[in-house]
Image (tube, rainbow, N blue to C red; front, side, top):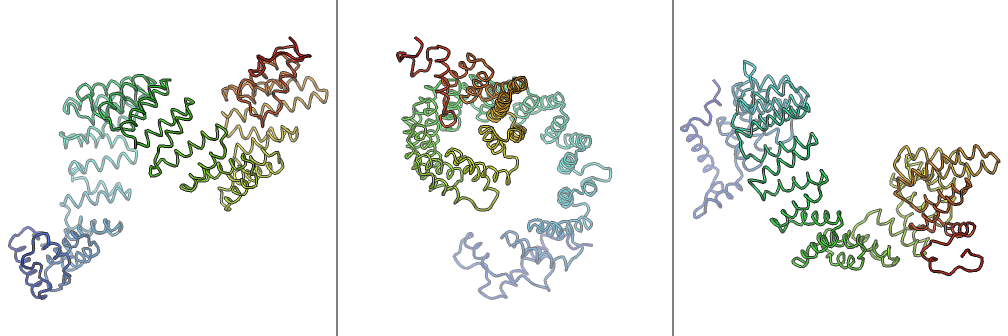
Length: 621
């Protein structure tokens, strides 16, 4: 018979054991005494922990080593505990309890192989120990040994040992995709613990996996009869409706819960999100108002409410809401940041600067606030102030995008060499160099040093052959110069395969066709030219749609009409382009073409800067 089977169960035996241990400690001398006079329980425990145990007692019975192992475990000394249990196993190799402890210690020490080995020994020695079988089952599941899992977690009739075993078997069946077996186990789990929800939720998961949402809903509804008003079940029911795309039903579930618990934070949050996803922004605003009123310290919901109000044009309401919070709590950086964004978007740039500037340097979003300030300065033409803010941000947070922005601002201020030097300092021989090459190419192109720009863009493609922007840049540059048009078309088509919805790349392809048509006209091939020009117009109209309207695209469409021989159509597009944001570096001739065409057609200028200007001699009255 195993001596382990009675270990810990006989009070007399353990009393003898503790007496033996006390004698051993006394024999070790006064320094080994666990207590000293006048010491409280807490102090006594600390003193005992500091006493170096004489742990190796070959002559002591196995219970001594078990006790030492348990004490070492309690103190977190797992290696010492493992050694103690190993000594116990030598003294009593037939102890399933000891091998079970060794298995658990090995698991805690991340020695999975040893844990599995010891657990299998423990199971063989004591096959009726449910704890050992469950532990071994977890190890089998981790190692994907499903045959072993069935062997240790089922009884002789093939039934799960208990609810925990059924749950483990269900999880394993689900993981390996055997939904029929998982469903059967979920039903068994329901029978084994009818007063718990594990079986219900497991069965619901099976139905959801099969996309049988009606069955999943019926399962939850049935469970709600036994577990009324259970939040978890209502949440799962709402999840089912969300999975089937029925936002109205999902919202109805949340409102059903809120009828009895009107201020439940989690349900209110889910309701607001469902309302947003169903595009009922007004309802979502009302829900967030309820949240903010009930939980005034919830800054996230407050910002979300202001954002929603802003999204539907309630700019004053959004701004006033955030300012009211700041009046009460001036040190709320997130609120100040949100206010700054709203004010900036509505064109109140000076007040936006004030909002961003009130964010303390100790706030996590301080750098982001300085970047916003830099953007406002740059948009207002205060380039030096923008650069100062970016340099401040760079001194706190190293990021390549900030370096790129600093280089661009330096170049904009006229110090081209400093900007290029900053970019070149970022080159480190890694894949990230392609980003730097692209920036250098852009700036050399802006400086009209096209050959160098193209060279850098070719370097981008060497490191990243599918860089759509570099492909487009090279193709468009060639088209602008009227060279390599076939190769330009190929590059831009590759770019469109990568970014098919990019309106500016689409514009580039239309411009290539325009240049091809121009060459065909010069060669006297009018019919061919008109066919290619039709392709150009088609691409440019698509580009206008994709960009939502762009000055360069409109100018290109005007060029197409002029080349086709339709000056009136060209004038309409040129005037539309002039009324948009004109990019002078890309459109240096737009206004000149517009004025010339107006004179040729005898039209009165429509440009805002010419509406009230009297016509001079030679201009139509």
